[in-house]
Image (cartoon, rainbow, N blue to C red; front, top):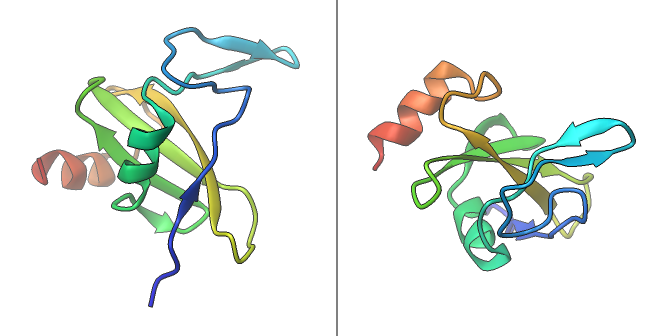
Length: 101
């Protein structure tokens, strides 16, 4: 049985935002959806490993990248939005996710 994935908002990505933040001189992508919607999308996210999962965000026209915080029993992830043209999403994953919709 796969343990439930848990989502946690982080200050550096925020929630329901389109603003790129500068954190430690590095641009950080925002999370363009709500915590509730991101948590729901996390449950069906896919990837090549549990360290990074991906899902399509149809409402915002892009994808959400989920990063595993650490190998803990809480199975905690944080996430941020990327555009549909982002090179951060492998083409084969983009294809799978867009064909599911």
